Amino acid sequence: MENTKIKNEKELDLKIAECFKKFNDKLTEKSVRTITICGGTGCLSSDSKAILDEFEKQIKERKLEDKVKVNKVGCFGFCSQGPFVKIYPEDTLYHGVTVKDVTEIMDTDIVGNQIVERLLYVDPNTNKKCIRQEDIPFYKKQMRIALHGCGVINPEDISEALGYDAFKGLVKALKMSRQEVVDEVLASGLRGRGGGGFPTGRKWQFALNQNNDEKYVVCNGDEGDPGAFMDRSILEGNPLNVIEGMMIAGYAIGASNGYFYVRAEYPVAVSRLRIAIEQAEKYGLLGDNILGTGFNFHVHIRLGAGAFVCGEETALLNSIEGKRGMPRPRPPFPAVKGLWGKPTIINNVETLANVPYIIREGAQKFASIGTEKSKGTKVFALGGKVKNVGLVEVPMGTTLRELVYEIGGGIPNNKEFQAIQTGGPSGGCLTIHDLDTPIDYDNLIAKGSMMGSGGAIVMDEDNCMVDVAKFYLGFICDESCGKCSQCRIGTKRLLEILDKITEGKGEMEDIDRLYELSNSLQVGSLCGLGQTAANPILSTLSKFREVYERHIKDKKCDAGVCKNLMQYTIKKDSCIGCGLCARNCPVDAIHPTDYIAPGKKKPAMAIDQTKCIKCGSCMSGCKFQAIIKG
Image (tube, rainbow, N blue to C red; front, side, top):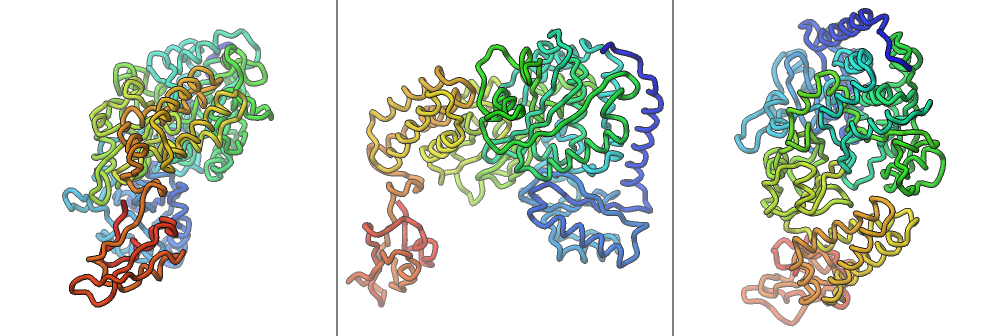
């Protein structure tokens, strides 16, 4: 397909301008106020749909339909404080809203034009109430590029997306040659956000160079890392932005078909993606002869069954083709021989979400953000032992300390920070000594971890690092496709050694065995799943070797997590003999002794360690802190 001049460029520009005005009017017109409600999966699970329904019901009952509108948007990001309700044009943001709060918001804010003070977020550092989103510390160091439009537009209304810059990047790309588009992406420095960090423009160049009448673009939405929800939130909040990125990629390499591979566990994302595709086709922005240029592009959706290995690009291709999700030997690489043997580029959701910005705003603007070798921003799913759990997008070069303490708010309950796991099961743990490391691909690898797709799990003093490694190895064992023996058998043997250590049966030689098996996995596995499977072990051994040795030599788990290496003990002099612990014990392991502590009236209780199952019900129920874990 040769690049041709757009015939109805002015018509499209007018349409976009008209939609922008409609969108802008909807949010700023004084006579019409808009109540926006978070419709991301997290808030939907906290009854945001019921909150929306209640607002609509009360607006109708009060006959305010001409003055007040309700709008559903994507994820606001600050998940631990949802559901959110935002009032336009004032930009007042309420957090932790429930159905019971709707009447007060209607009476006080919508009718009375007064702020509902108790629903404002309070900055824990200053005790100041934050009226607007930008006042909240969680948002201050963030920059939304991949999350463009999320939490602002209705993801099921294409007119709002068009009013928020949708398809402007595509229009600009269609005025360029295919090579010019690839060159722009190359100049931006964009690297794959799915984990590998391979330069996106180089991948596109490989595919463009292939002389083939049929090529494909695949969007990898098979987000399988435990605790990760970046791709899901992008697809839920602004699916048209990702579709536009896929279309630009298709135009750049000469493809006319794109496939979204999304896990079936994301029903909201899939539903909104389908709606966005249908609306774009209706507007003539997707399909045949787009904008009169002769460029044809069709988008298809394939649902994955949740296999983690299908995040590996060649296993994903097999799954789309209806085969078992197992990786293929490389070379040939997908850019040469991919889907159905045709040249194929595979980018993940976040990567494609950056593309419209790069084309729309220019490569240099994108390249001005971030570090020398890692340009732009990165989206993280920040979770674990951190106060502000949520979705975060920060410029590359932001330090881990800023991520954990300034954006994340620090560790709850005055606990000590111990580690942060980045990169999911393929990544590694970073310690307090790494907190001032600027986040980028090369820095994290140098520290023994990796960027991965963007999971960031914070751990405190109550986490056992051997148990953390065992958790990730257990996950990998379950998710290994079994094609190569190093991964199929090696991960199982590694897990058995970790089980042995956490059960108090470990030997010092086991550490050497862990290193030996880990090296075998790295050099002998076919795909990235096996090659990186041992990373959690290697990083925890490197950073927390003394914890492994304490488990092996002293048979102690200082975090009190490994049950076979801990026990609950009753302090005799603190026990008043109330018997509550005995009544709570599910296995009848607690009985009174003959000892009565000074000043006490009843015999102290004691735990029969041969019967104790380490459930902790005795300790949690004791009101006198007479039971200790150690």
